[in-house]
Length: 324
Image (cartoon, rainbow, N blue to C red; front, side, top):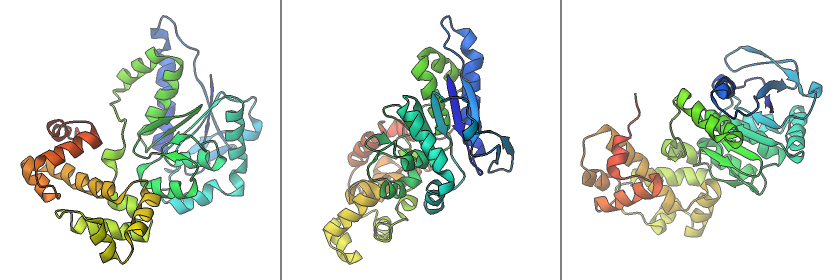
């Protein structure tokens, strides 16, 4: 199983290392299985003979033009460019045309193409995500959605599998991406690797998203986010929000839907849930007190929101503090 990991100058060290370590662990643990799959032959490729990582390390690579044969899988890890505009400039530049062509060729030849975090923009720019479900880093969702409207984007997901296409979210999701590829060949080996790496369950990125960051790309959506946060303890009325922001209800609904892929009311619930999560995890306030502070008349509404959005009870949610 030949895997080509495509890297560029500025490749994110953590994500790149996570891919290599996961495949390396899978190769090392193959001997523990009675029916072991073939090893993963991981080759690091780029447009030249080396790249420099975001931390300044020189990574020797095989030029794409010198690839001896078509790989069965091509992966694009994250590049350390957090802003959407410079990222889009990078992936759409003529210098990267060869990489986009290779992504398309691997997919057309029946191979897997995969990417995580900012690397997902390469797959989208190549067109291989059109018409399929995909994810990306949660803070890039609005820009991704505007640039690639044909992609069925759900940035709340950590991992998304399509037809020979796999996308993953932010940094740690590189591990999930590699494990998904291992699982597609040997579920037993993937389970073994999970245990050795002590990898937890991170199916959803939504718990990490910060509404203020997500909304900042569009002036009306950002203004609505600020308006809602300042009035988070009050009953939400979209008519009032639109009036005070100087737009029609329909314009506000369209703007939020286009930018965030959700309704204004759902976004207000995200803001409330973000604040509630912080209060539940960092204070000893009762559930009723927390509910009141985030705009709900009673605790049942907050319990319902947590169950609906996070799939757990308030008690489970409150107990799920980060290990550190």
